[in-house]
Length: 304
Image 1 (cartoon, rainbow, N blue to C red):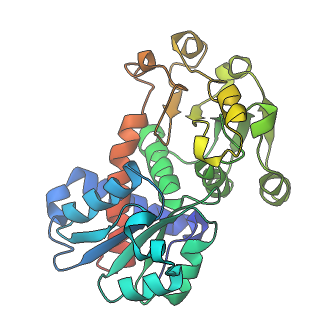
Image 2: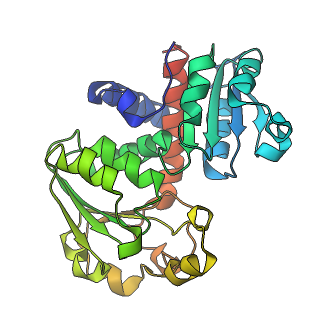
Image 3: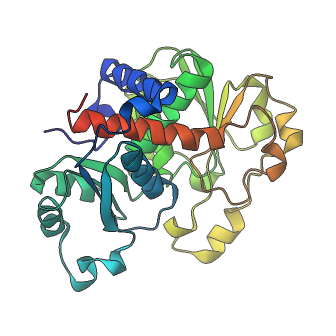
């Protein structure tokens, strides 16, 4: 039995197979429409989610399976004080595979250690978000045709953004990746990412405060929102929430084939006027998220 706690749980060759399967699903979805007949996915979301939870549910339904679960901690026995360990032991009696999101870093790992079914980390605090990373990698590979030799700009909340942290960890395994980090001083990449991931692996990166100063150098721009739920100080959040707004004027500085990605939800960081730009692929990302989660479910259940 295998779990997914981090994007690094799969080797790059295993990821290639996963993405090949996702691409096959994209081309011929009917072929896979009954592969999970009789299987049940449990979605245990202790933290609010729209895209991730619904994407998992959509993936399982498209595979012919069923879904049960809860969408916030208040509607589960966690509100009565039940531990994650006890919850997953109980869920293991009801379902064949589980996706768990939790505000505490490491909670999905605790669950996986006590589970008798495969567990997928659907986001734990500011730590990891591996299935979003798989979505990002599949989007890049599908739209760019490769996962190496490009310059990617990561913009916005780089301190608390688990999607950013997961993506950095995943991309350093591919050759020729150049990182450009764009953030205010207060939201810079954490020291543990800088020291233990980037510096330790001798990965090249540059840092900017102004997006305009590096747009022309980017092959990919990964925008993120400033996350209110990660701030302890409301005034600090209000001061920083609109620090970056990607609009047509900034897009005019970029390469004609640069792609804009975003894990969503967005607030104000990407103007709606950018949505019609062919380089804006964040809604295509959402669709790729369904395909890659379908491929992941099939892989972890050993149905392929």
